[in-house]
Amino acid sequence: MSDPQNHAAEAELTREQRFSPEPHSAPAARQFVLAMGWSSDADVNLRLSTVVSEVVTNAILHARTPFVVTVTPGQRTIRVAVTDGSRDLPTKKTYGTLQPTGRGLHIIEEISDRWGVSASTSGKTVWFELERDQVAS
Image 1: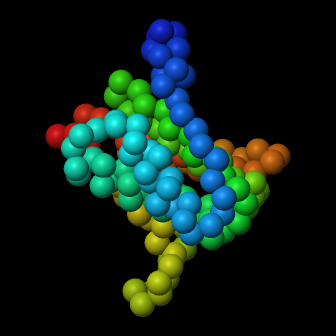
Image 2: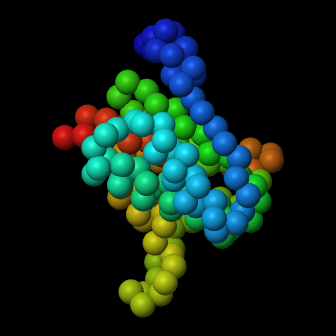
């Protein structure tokens, strides 16, 4: 059973920012997420930054709509969600080693502890979570 006080505290810490579907939005989104100061561990921040980059780059390249990055830090996890205006759901691709694209979802799956997609009538949200205990050791 979840603790209502924890949910209230997490909601209070939640931050979101809207970005345009432009290449400069990827580093801006990374900076936005890292500025939350979730961890002072360089390895944790690298992992977080990498997955944010992949999810945001997918939104820029495939959705081509403005998108919102929502960050919810909890006691044990951080959850990042990217909501865009495309109803096309992401699919994992398998390309040869010389192909420059097609690895984003594989990277997200490998680096994050959990990830998923929520569809809506106005688009979709791709989210991931990192567990503090597992990444901070």
